Length: 131
Image (cartoon, rainbow, N blue to C red; front, side, top):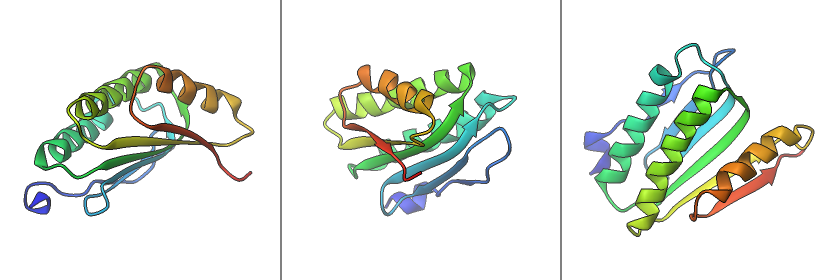
């Protein structure tokens, strides 16, 4: 069983890092906030490790829920690693998807989601939040 080998993540947001929550039972990884941590490797290594463990643990679908207002360059690189893991899983037949939420008053966040979506073939929705 997944729960015996993998625990849910729950990282509180800071001024420079997003809230991160996972739900093993529902197959959801959520991130919300801004991402410009001093050490992005430290933040994203735990997320990437969790994702790898989840994808190796079974065939359950995974949905990535992102509401990221701003990402610095190192956070963008980490997101690419995350999306690359999802693409490899999708290529192997795993059901994965991304919902990229953005504030309609922040067109740059929507543009960044569009830029990411162009590079991947799994379902990747760009969704405007209610203002």
